[in-house]
Length: 488
Ligand SMILES: Cc1cc2nc3c(=O)[nH]c(=O)nc-3n(C[C@H](O)[C@H](O)[C@H](O)COP(=O)(O)OP(=O)(O)OC[C@H]3O[C@@H](n4cnc5c(N)ncnc54)[C@H](O)[C@@H]3O)c2cc1C
Image (cartoon, rainbow, N blue to C red; front, top):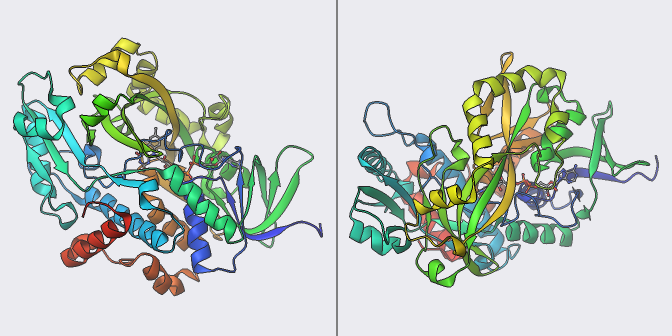
């Protein structure tokens, strides 16, 4: 017992969430002792890896699911889109500060300007996009968004998508200030700084169990038997799809009733320089009827290790693993007496979704190419290859005795604030800073109010809403664009 190592915080998982929380903690309290455990050989190799996600800096500039159409043809409500954009501005400010402090290296290594566009077909959707544009372009955070139904203009913006297209109505919006982000490189750079600042990082080590003592401290079991363990005052479960499993093991009552619904993601990719040169944007469209919001099709410029590719997808599918490098037993093993009814009720309420996902898994290669052809009419299938991206573990949330499927993220924390974890996947890494601030507030309720000034040093607009202060919004966006070398 005497030799057991003790840390202030144990961070489980080496993805962007643990990395972000670790940097926040170290910045706010340089003396804090941290340990991070990662079950794989390297950090940032699950959802945060650049090839396992789409790298979109989600700011609601192009994703229709953050702003569904109104029922009566009036202007759609921008509130959710504005809220997502506000969260992305928090991330941008934090990343800018980390660049200034040389914690994050050259901005080009992890973020670039890639215009964000929305593309729709048919009179009904063109009208919706027009009204969406009218509603959003009044918002300071969306200033400068352009709209067009003119095929000649659209051809100048996205030639790959207009060549060979018939003349039926299409409409697009364009925001020049969109971004493509390599969350994996960012995670690695943050973790490198944490290690240089004294954090202990252990890779190839899986946390197997958690046990809370009566004095509220945690014992964390590492690896298989004979288990070694450490002690920590507080634990963050940043284990991605495995967060549910570990939170269940912690036996905190707050996890009761929760479940996880895994959805796999695949993309088509081309590195053909001729195609890459004809498409310099992330273009999001409408999801198919019955499709979950995260399977909205998009054709994206992607920059990883300085090389540009195009990717199209995602093709969602049913797969019982909770992590890409997980086990097919993950889903059955997560079913407990307390979440059995939520699981069953979600399955019954979402039979259409289950059917859709099975259909997607069994979709032939030529059907997938047909989906791509609606974006790239002059398609040569030989240019494109199919690859597996990450697993999304969507949240099943208990509501009453039943369960509902959620497509956002959910922070679960114990009443005593000694443990917190993150379920869910959207809008994901883009809003990691806001989500980790929420975690910090729950885990450090007494100290958090005293950190406000320090937090304003890291995130100058902390505590204020940019969209309500156009001058501040402009100043902030310009400043972060300058530091991150993005288009202002
Ligand atoms: C197909 C797809 C597309 C996406 N596209 C976007 C996008 O365009 N933009 C965006 O912002 N977000 C996107 N996301 C979401 C984003 O990738 C995730 O929200 C984010 O990467 C989650 O980070 P994390 O740190 O929580 O999890 P992860 O990056 O998955 O990290 C969790 C880590 O915990 C480790 N781990 C698990 N269990 C244990 C254990 N017991 N012991 C030790 N280590 C453990 C895992 O090995 C892993 O390394 C996408 C996700 C997917 C799957």
